[in-house]
Length: 159
Image (cartoon, rainbow, N blue to C red; front, top):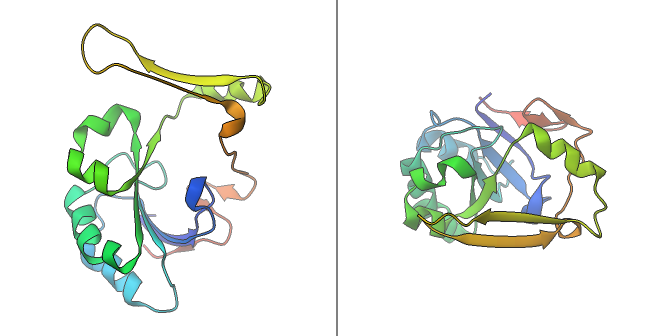
């Protein structure tokens, strides 16, 4: 599965009709074909869906030029480890979900959402330093009840 339509279930754009792009092999014309079908009324393009680890940056640029001016939101989900692989201008133009998938994250469910905080940091003597924190209660939690593999119940697979 490389291309599918459904409602966004995660984050700030939850509820938007979304075209999920889950492969770097999807070409611009394939996205354009789906968006030209008025039945779908796509509000967001979501690159990197379904744990896709690589995104075709040229296709994203084409979509930014063609669809962003029409009000379609362009989102890229990028693994933290690969952010440096992407053009900085592209990172500034798109909505970014910087994703980390780790087995140990399941243990976060044991914490009290009101008293626990999440801290992301890089304090090494070399490179870019950063330290950000947020209360666990500031994070939105998505129900995974209807998630089956890469799609949620009701999603429509195109390719």
